[in-house]
Image 1: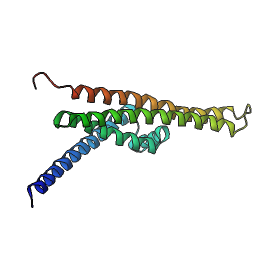
Image 2 (image 1 turned 120 degrees about the horizontal axis):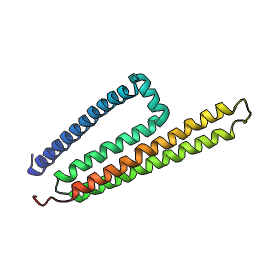
Image 3 (image 1 turned 120 degrees about the vertical axis):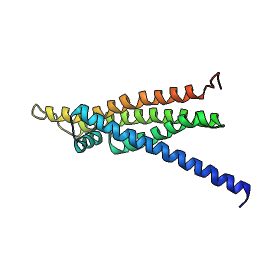
Image 4 (image 1 turned 60 degrees about the vertical axis):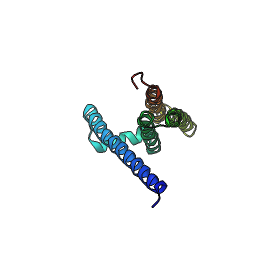
Length: 169
């Protein structure tokens, strides 16, 4: 095996270890966060998962989680590697992706709410049902924004601050 092949194998091993440790930390943090939210909201895990699916949808949760893991990984890597510019750019683009995802799901929730108004007749007897469905879609719209935009700003700020070299370094 040549020295280039050995170096590539060594780099792949280090990369795999970094991914594994980052994913492990994120899964552990997610479990602790679910337990904390379950305790605060006084809901069991099954009810909490149903609530998450109702408010956010699984597609938002999956995309958001994936972008969040990549953003945190980029924030860690920007301080520990020689190609800081690359990981800084990855972190910046991920934060932009989280903001775009949040705003996209905001517009989706609003359009689903407005779309549900057009499909039902509004009578004094049906007003409560129509408003209930409308607020359900609007809660998806606003909660994705409330979660997504601050997270995007936190990732962007964290990656940016970590990319600045220390004077002691």
